[in-house]
Amino acid sequence: MGVANLRSLGRDEILLSPSLIEHHPFSISVGYHLSDSILEGIENQPTPHYFHHYQRVNILLDTIGLVLTSAIQDLGYRAMPIPASQIVDWKTQKGHLSHKHVARLAGLGWIGRNNLLVNEKFGSRIRLVTLLTDLPLVTEGPQSMGLWVLSRLPFCLPAGLFQNVRRTFITFVAMSN
Image (cartoon, rainbow, N blue to C red; front, side, top):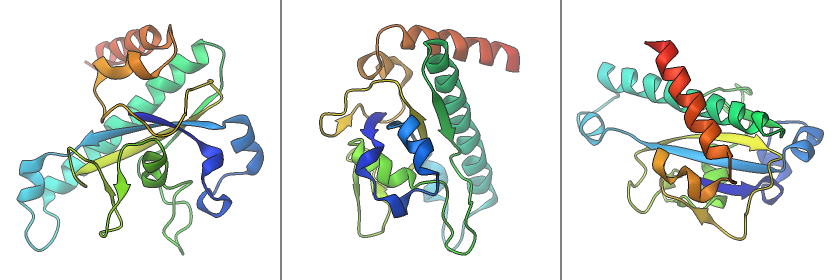
């Protein structure tokens, strides 16, 4: 998880209105380490097992985005999750914004020769989600908190938000069962 100022992204990298970015100048980037075993099972093409894993991780990341959105809004700020995997421009195969470029700005890694985000610990075996907000976040240079680990949230987020996230996430899990 890391935070970044969206104003650092080029205007052509964001398929959202400029006024929306003005109202949500900060971003939270959350990553999830994919299963090494599942990825190592891929030989010539993605397997059904990988496809299932990919879908479930995207659902998890979207859920994390929703939980963070709820917690931030409970504090009186704006928040908007960007889906982990949604194409909005089919011609150029682009989403609302590039999760990997936001994650790079947030200090989660660098763009490698494979054109993927490469994390120091997990390589390119990660999936990402981005949350836009007006919550005043500290973005003095790359703010890497590692990839998604619930216990690391308090170090990156303002006081009070972590308790809201934790309470909302526990409620969500309880309602899902």
